[in-house]
Image 1 (cartoon, rainbow, N blue to C red):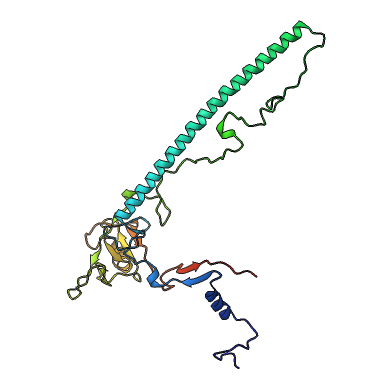
Image 2: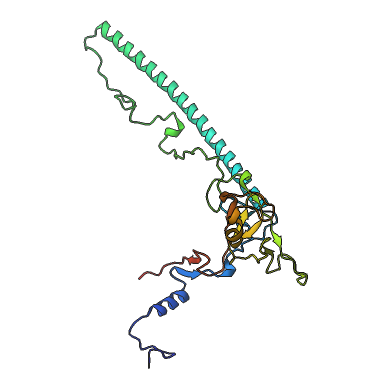
Length: 291
């Protein structure tokens, strides 16, 4: 039976293909699969909802969001910050109260120690036949043990107290995609240019070609690099930027003067091609079968 026969069972080597096929069928081991076009969002979809944007806005890094979705995200983060801040302030008040209680207990302990010392001096002056008393104290705070043992009158010093210190929260809201600071004033409203096709009677979401470049009239898609002009919000192709805008740095529609920072590269979705996108590999971790 040859190696390439359909029912080849005489091979002396357990090949990589056979091992990979058996691992996929067994349900064990980590499986790496390439993500296709259907698993990556489109270029005009929100990075949070993964749905076409109704009121699109873009960050300085070029990530597209629906205005309603990003507003809900910012509000939720600020609400979470206020909740953590209240917990932090409550912890500070509790620590101050414990410090005051500890100071009062230490003051009372010093007073008792002073009274005992005065009592011993009085007994010594009276002069007894047995001499000064040298009785040993059975207190667990005597003979310097008060510095080593915890203060049992403070709740946080109890042996069974769980130390869960709340750190001071960060008031900065960060972008959920890039992780950089996010401010609402930095969001730029995006203006799409619709494709005018009188023969296409489909709704906007059902159309395959929805938007185009207002200058070159090229159809926009995941395979076409796009940029947002910050001053007006128009979306143009990078080919238009390189060949038209960068010649004299003038807005092709309004004639305004532009700068390098006014061109925001729009982060694309995915096409499934390695040349266009990176990190298109998905990892599915499953239980590992050990010998």
